[in-house]
Image (tube, rainbow, N blue to C red; front, side):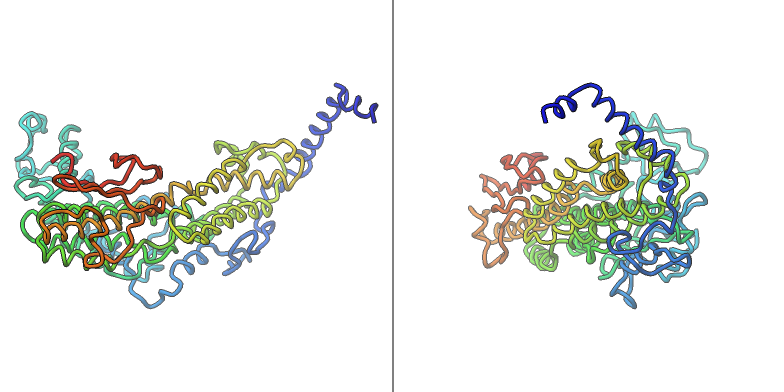
Length: 544
């Protein structure tokens, strides 16, 4: 034993082991590199590898495009789809980057998936505020500061100016104009350019509101070829149009409040919340994140209306009733564990049969440099599915803060284990394949704590909005704000005041002329109502 121990410690033994490792790795390079390129026949169809096992294409492989679309519309057959109304409101231009000449998307396939007639390029479609070709009337510049008027290009007769021809300083000023309309009630004379944009957007905004009122909104994928990976054709541009339309609704809500149209102001605020309400988790994480942001923006609009002093008792009562109909958004866990998984597996399935996959993987940052070695894509897929299975365990969380804690723990675990070289794993086919699977999962998987933090942010914003409205109703009835939130129950509120971020009661304190209400926010630390770290509603606002 002593002799063996001495041999293992010798330089000769170490050198021999290194040479053996190099020889074994060379076998992987010279003998079986073709396994890296795989091919359709090398992927085993099973829940452990491809996750979905049907339907199949003519070549016998999983049709991921059809599987995903069947998944998102399951149970909604025969019901009106609000996405059709959104496409009709935004027009073909909102889909150009996904369905242009050089893209994988097929606009005709999208129309077919949605069951709608093709749209004309000319129509009364919504035009975003920052669209470079938007025509601006000379009347829009009446309120320009004198120093900016001097920077305008010379006018050619009656030709209207466009943002494309505007100096950056003027374009910046116009965008700041819109931002000013998203904070408090205002009137047309204060921001004429924004008011005109809202008037010209009236027809498409009515379609957006109709889509918001539609209980079903599912978005399909549409590719030119059934073998195209799903991640190539998201409706990102339509989501950006949706975000801009949301800002239009919020600006119009404040405009209506500023001109005394209280019902109209509440209608637009509630429509914004409805627009962001996710009725199904069966969609992409991109759509869910945009919806969560819209949902929060609508809640904040309703809260600002309530605390602005423009709503009377009847309007506040109506706003409270409208808000009672809303609950937290659909579960993000299902979105990631099922919808995002199908997207990820479809991408890996496509890469496995790509003859150039070695070069593509080699160009990805943090990807293990294994592309010249033999790999088993089935093992890689099993590894990827294993991580998504761990995300699915978040379903067991009973509360929002428990889910956040579990998500943070998973994030830490994933980052500590995924894609770590560990040289001994390079010596086996399964070890190398698992490494690639881990690296791909790390690349495609969203940041868990960030995603679930956004979900809980939307839940917190809704809760705080309901409380803000109740506080204003209490003030109108009692000429002061309550000393504690418990004084709102049971007459004005029947819910608990639990902070979704940490499970403790929401923080509230009355002041001489108002109150401070806050949640600890995404850092889950009580920063005493510090804006930016905590989610804060303060009346009066610090600027006042």
